[in-house]
Length: 204
Image (tube, rainbow, N blue to C red; front, side):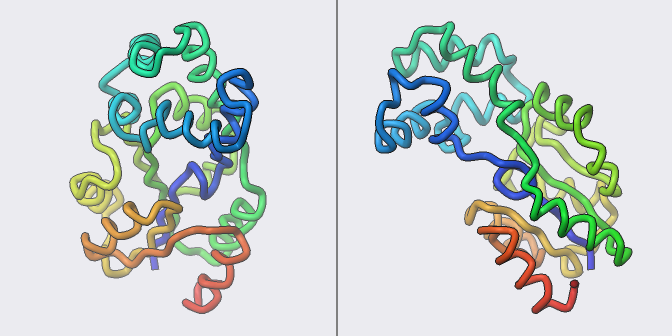
């Protein structure tokens, strides 16, 4: 069985409303305001942010677009964009699962919507990523999940059989897209839940 991991929200922490509450306290003074701002700023990883994930827009241009779109000081938009890499800290429980799966000899891959500067940061900072046999960052192929084309690209890039591949992602749309492409898939909610499902599947 091949196992393919998402990054944000699965292997690395990503809770945008908490992040914005810290970065922009004046604009996100309450949890409700922070959640609303996260929707506007990141657009559910659609719109401007999707272009960033695809690698079709640079961070400087993205900041100006977001600032104009939501009426934010451009300096603050750029501050948020620049601050994301430090927010992407490893989820230790998932890293532990990754190491256990690697020790069992299972083929490991990743498929992540990730802008170019963040992908470079992760590659440079986290040696445990060497446990993956290969991976696809959206910014390097010009495609993003849940576009069916990125799953097809991953199959070719990894040389895998979709039916013998388990995809782990926190977003329901990405999980469903993988299933539609013929992959097995599970929605990640926590390291404990992920471990339990891997045990049920006989993978741990």
